Image: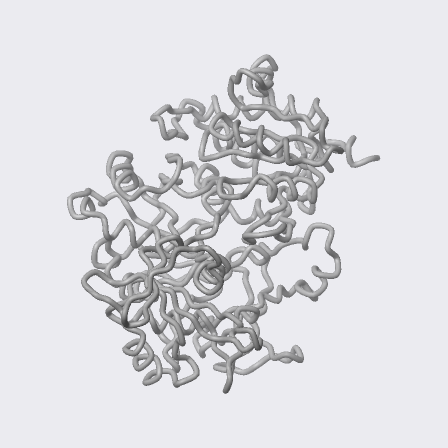
Length: 537
């Protein structure tokens, strides 16, 4: 039997599981969008059934890939659930990607269909112009009425709202995740239905019972997973188009939010907003953060302002969630002063190995390896790369770290981001962790750059703390005293903000290009040699 004509599967996918939960309380409001419109459990379920039938009739089933160009809308969730229920895998495109990059990703993933919601329709038209000629007949459907597009949801409404039998098994892809990468095409990470279904099961401490989740970061990333988890566990979701601190605070108070997900730079914006002190945050039981290094001083501030609600996650796209720190654990340090990223999530195993693959004893630094039920299936159509990273069910993370005697993990840095300087190696994350302890530094990103003779030099881009002006000599002395001379930055760049990639992480590539190879960038250098580059903000 071909993969396109499978019999219904006995496997219960995450979509089946969520829709079963919704069917138990059909009149309950489960989604509130950014415009304040509400959707009941029955309405959402029926829209998913109708669109799944429509997409399957158009060929979006097992073996097919559907591209989603959507924002934080109810229609975006309906489209993802429907495509997966129909049997197709999805590729989530998102704001911040260039049209050529999106076109390259669609070509790489062999997408057979593009779905776009109303807010992204103009980008869909731009994207279609970037696709190769071989994709000229690619169906592009809107998820709302448009003047020049076919409305897939309107077609779906004409279909009976009856259950659509699932065809997928646990080893079928539900998604190809293209994350990171500011130029060229990032690697496609194959995520299968089995791990995702298992991943929505566990209850999160403090998230609420039932949870009420605020999705104010992109549904194309971790917020989307937390939405699935929330809906499956009988909760409800409030959608915002993006993060803005005043709006997030007002929404938490108005909607009685119990849980949200933020990257550390967004958490800092929340802490710095003048409305924080006057906002009722008593409903908030959990703020999950991660994705980049956090400042210990800022975490202390967050704990004082928000209470014991902070939960830090360490993971990566290939291995998903690896460790967690709970309230009171964020400032735990190892013998050499590194902050912990927590202990292994349930079902996750961690080993530290040397370059020969031998397991290292407690306290020794090496590569972090992870064996997890949530790990990727492999890279999309890159078997050699898959074999390098995924060996004997262990994911080679590329991170350098060590474990202590209680099982707490400490991550030093990425192997590939290590800066090779005269006298040794500098790990950017290790230096960033130290710089964030300096009273004049509010945020920072460390990166290396090679000179004309291919010698690497350590650069630090920082955002000054209020009332301070970091000085290169002062910073170098601070670092030298605590870490040694080779860690001392050779250049200090004071910026109004650290530029972020489309997924919200510090953009080292952009910093390197604008600060070290500015070409025609406007540069202003003060008398003490500190560079202020407003173009990089």
